[in-house]
Image: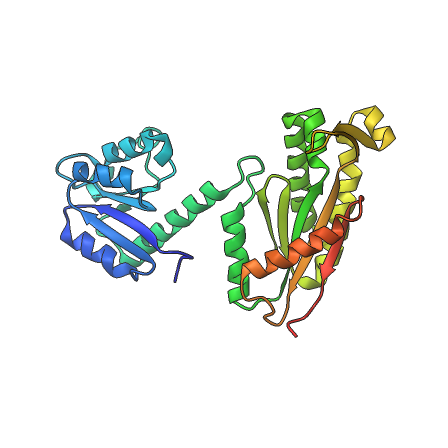
Length: 314
């Protein structure tokens, strides 16, 4: 499959040739198209069963394609639904105000099949990335992370997957507030991104699972050095987020999850590294399960640390 799950598309068009083209460009297991020849007839279907992508032909007889896009995008729940317009060449003789026309892309007749297929594919991928990105750090979110891990596993690539978790973040957040907590999360993202970027010429990936959980993927041979650099950079910066008296004392007083007042150490970073070598992993869930055990081991240390699982496929 081109996609990790079947995509559902709706094409609004009275043009049978365009409908036949779209149905011919994808295997139904990749994209299943519903063809509707009138725009207003489609509205209830779109809102009751939102597709993954909406393609609207400007040749609709009952409603302009731009109005369809405006109606769909005006509903906050459906603003992220990608909309592609199908236009005739003379439609573009006058400039279009794309600030007002809330479309995500357009295709122009005569349609080139390969270009149409790839433009639709690109629009779907772009929408997926935009919806998945963490709103605070803008790093790829959980869906993108899972997709990247599974893709590497399916290709039987060797890699190291590092799960990073902030320790004692909740106690910091409770004492200093969400605004300063968000600053810590942003700082952690920058530290990881900039550190991994420092390894030039290697394929890498950084994602933000959510909250105070991050991941990065690097070649196995640099994984330990990457962890060392991330921990060193984090530990050098994080004390400056505390007030002077807490920083000098090396701890803060806050309420734990049971409602009891406790003393907590300064925030630390625990990293669990899972290696995929020789096709050891078959599913991303295996990596997550292994990492959970490693993180428990790492969290036994109140200081920032990392734990590496170097077990082979055997």
